[in-house]
Amino acid sequence: MIERLQKRFEDIFHAQADGCYFAPGRVNLIGEHTDYNGGNVFPCALVIGTYGAARKREDTLVRLYSDNFPEIGMIEFDITDIRFEKDHDWANYPKGLVYTYKEKGLEFKKGFEIYFEGNIPNGAGLSSSASIEVLTAIILDDLYQFGLDMIDMVKLSQKAENQFVGVNSGIMDQFAVGMGKKDKAILLDTNTLKYRYASIQLKDASIVITNTNKRRGLQDSKYNERREECEESLRILKTKLDIKALGELSEEEFLQNADLIKSETIRKRAKHAVFENVRTLKAVEALEKENIEEFGRLMYESHDSLRDDYEVTGVELDTLVELARQQEGVIGSRMTGAGFGGCTVTIIKNDRINDFIENVGKAYEKTIGYAADFYVVSIGDGAHKLN
Picture: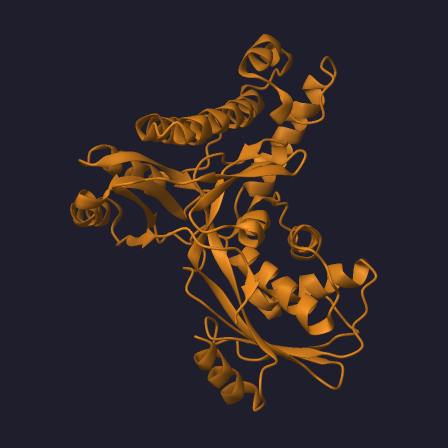
């Protein structure tokens, strides 16, 4: 892979790269739309992701190129003039990292060049944006020898997405991309950033990601609206309760105080955030006891809540989960990511994977009118320099 990256870099920039790097995509096994509500999430890094080759320049020019967006061509700007520009499209994510590094007081006296290529399906909800962000973070840290630790880079990556790109995402995506470990998922308390790793022992089963192939853009979706609805529910609950986040509530505490929220819609949003948080802790406990069937049941429960209370699924995701329920060997299935399109994550017995792909693929295309894509994935390490 390093040879390929070096060659592509030379083809495009006519120079030798200083280094090659990788940042994975991520999938969240359970705990959806809890990360900006101070709750728990349970993501893992994948072996698919974004690769980069980079070098520092002797002037202040920055040049970025991605083989995933060849039609956009080379993006160029000056390191002293960092602004969000809509026609820079995907390159606003790397630009956002320069912006947040500068805000932190880190100096760039010289520009740089980065070649990107990735094998995460664009717009699938596997965090291609966070992958690009954290990849850029480790590249900048290495090229300029800033000496940041990974948690710092994760926080700066999230800040870039929130403040520069304008998507109010929680920290889960960047955290999973930066801190992932092979064959482990991360139980992360997004309120405190306390985390621990849990081994994923699926034995005779695997994780299959199914892409609806319905493209969705977070900025164009109702993601920010859902976040505002949760903030409103928290504001109302705080008139009686001493809490800083919905994730601090138990199911019982929420039900005892739910009538404070007069809007049924906002009450449903808050209910999902609270119950999904508790469900995530139950799911991790089940996994650690090797009760994979209970983990699967909670996955289905999670999807139902995202469909009925949070209303972020849609016909494509619901169709995939309903089809999965009907297949032999499926342990559990749910939408993963922000919703409104994107992917489902399914745990399925290895000897049933081929049947699952064939049966669900045919039925989905018949119902929706276009094909889904399937990926049997492994859990890999977080962002790192390639040696």
